[in-house]
Amino acid sequence: MDELRKEETRYTTADIYALPDGKRAELIDGKIYDMAPPGLIHQRISMKLSRELSAFTEKNGGSCEVLAAPFAVFLTDDDRTYVEPDISVICDRTKLDEKGCHGAPDWIIEIVSPNSRSKDYMTKLFLYRTAGVREYWIVDPDQQITSVYSFETDRVEQYRFDEKVVAGVWEGFCVRVV
Image 1 (tube, one colour):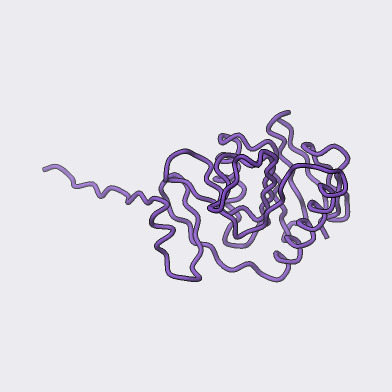
Image 2: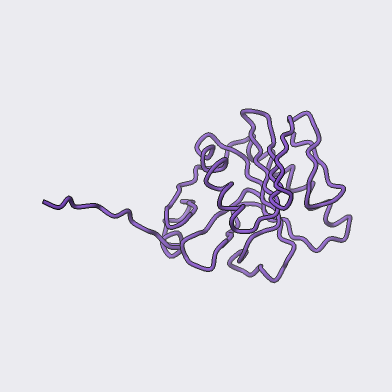
């Protein structure tokens, strides 16, 4: 007798947009990942980094746009992947419209929350690298470490929170996370 196999449901961006008001989730390869509201430390780090990045680009006359979550990023041309990175830096403004960013941002920063640890370190690391993101920072408040993945040079560097983190995609930019 043949065993019946239950196929895993595959979701699309239409399912994300159909979520009840206030409920946030990401969609990666057709799988929905619920998102919990960020905590205080997470928000403090996000605000500080967003301010520093925005100030740097304004001071240096850059064309890049710094956008903090919630902001939609559609990494692929299909309707099976939708993410909301904590911070996205997009230098090609033709990728931007009212719905979000269509294509890979140049630089993504994710701040690890207890429920996002494996997603940030594994799932999104692979996803962002494959999609063409140039640099990916994982800021981990529990470990007090920032991991910088430079996909262009295939390098990984780690910085303690008391050290200045050096960006690979923006020459001259460095920042203390806290």
